[in-house]
Image 1 (cartoon, rainbow, N blue to C red):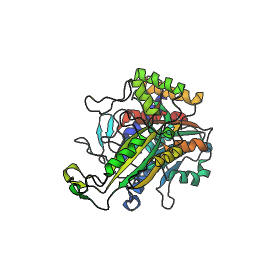
Image 2 (cartoon, one colour):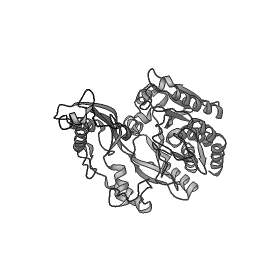
Image 3 (cartoon, one colour):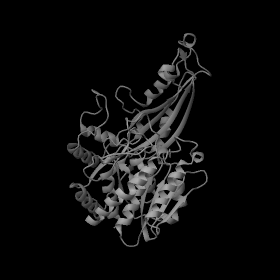
Image 4 (cartoon, rainbow, N blue to C red):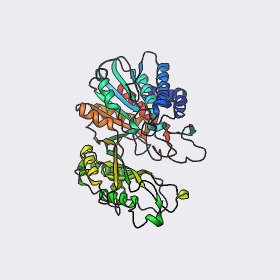
Length: 452
């Protein structure tokens, strides 16, 4: 174990971090944020960089970029072993910069500050391929079969992934273990395993009342405001006073007792994860445990984008013709996302005769991790103790990884380990994203021991 840790540490410093820096410079935005991704070529550039780096580490690894017509590519790496494989998952597509980054930082220019590497995609999820290949080479665990699958549409809800899982079914087979490297950690002082993930609905709702804008002195009080109609629609979905979701189909069956107990125990050791809140903001929930449970098991709505609304400096006395809101609804892990989507669409109506358009962009189920067998659990505890002096921890994540729910349905007897580096302040999807390098090394070591 000590030798493997030293090998992994050296590999990260000498070979991984320089290549990860090059990946950071590639603007490989997910298709939802770059509809012309195929013409721009950045996703393919990222796949080629990852593939070339893998071949340089070990020419015996079978490394291939697979691309189906009209779909983003996937990178597949195999070691040529035999038997039911261990399948390791990550993704190479990125979120957009989302606003201004701190002085001295840039989304597409890597900056290392001590143990942190800043840049878009460093932690979510560019590190995954490098960690997986480095772990595979460090494991030296005989001829068991390992398949590494890196997709390029995860940040868009993985619309292309199921087609590849079907296309590669003979090569994937029935995994004995799935290791997902796209999750998070509650702290940087131990390994963290994800016990559940929330589902997600993403939709754009457009309310149109005019074919063109008119002077508010002419139309105000006569033409209903598109923003007011949209606001009322959202109020059918969410209580604006409390943030509570009102549609029963989106609420699930409540938090299981064992999950509530586990999260409450974690909250006793870890107070609220640091969030960049403004001074004096009142957080929802009465206690840290309430908030940790809510993050893992509550339904919640956020407006993540708007069209039809000019910047404040450009806003004139105009009754605007339309308002479009992009909404993201997080769902408890046990909610059927398609049933929730149908209920959401049914709630989006109006009596004024305004034209409403609904574009349902993503429907993703949540995920409940099956129990780990004793051997895998013990290996993870050993690595966490060796790296940090603490046993591995378990907690529910508030995000969504559609791949895990799809695979669990297909392979109900497969073991799953979902882990990752997205911890406090790492700010995936937001400005100033960073990779916590010691945590990335520890995750790599954990994967190596699981493979061994």
